[in-house]
View 1 (spheres, rainbow, N blue to C red):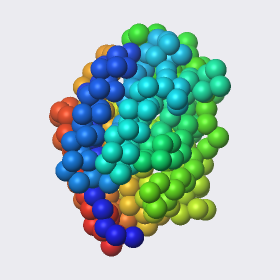
View 2 (view 1 turned 135 degrees about the vertical axis):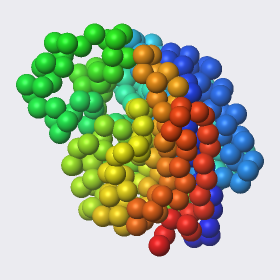
View 3 (view 1 turned 180 degrees about the vertical axis):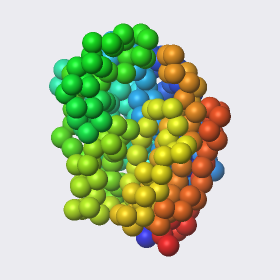
Length: 263
């Protein structure tokens, strides 16, 4: 495969303001494509973030919002990984939707929802529920509210086999077993949390252990009461940091050539 450019974006979006968020992201995607990107990566839940009514603010795959990214991908002959707050089969999901010139290439739905059993046992989860006040905690209860996908998977996108996982998925052992059994060319890890790298060495360790490059996205700015710092990153297959966005909560686009990611 010829070399090509990856563009990774961290944006400040507004909970529930779907039209605003999509409009902003499409302008950034256009800029990335015009600067030569073949793949454009966005953060988890870009379209609506966390809300009190995920059904109201979710969008179906045949929505105008999703189609807008298809139009861009077709015009520039590239690929977009959209963080979609999705409604599918009558339930809300947190989804990664891949769009290319031909339309929707693949969909991955977040499977190990926050807080999953690898992050909280039943006693801890019950305490979490007892103390949970939705607006004070940014509506971040996923388990029992959001629909769960069928497990992490590898999707072929533009000739590249991409392993897909979303935020809390990364804290569950089963997510990584998928990529051990079916090694991808690249792992894409969407996030919507405080700082995607920071002091956490897990991404570098996983990239090195799986011998697989990794792209990590994160949002910036306020998600209700939480201020997200960003730290989006692109890692080589030995865990080397190739590019990293700021960790001060500012919007930014970072770049890498795919050839840089194979050591």
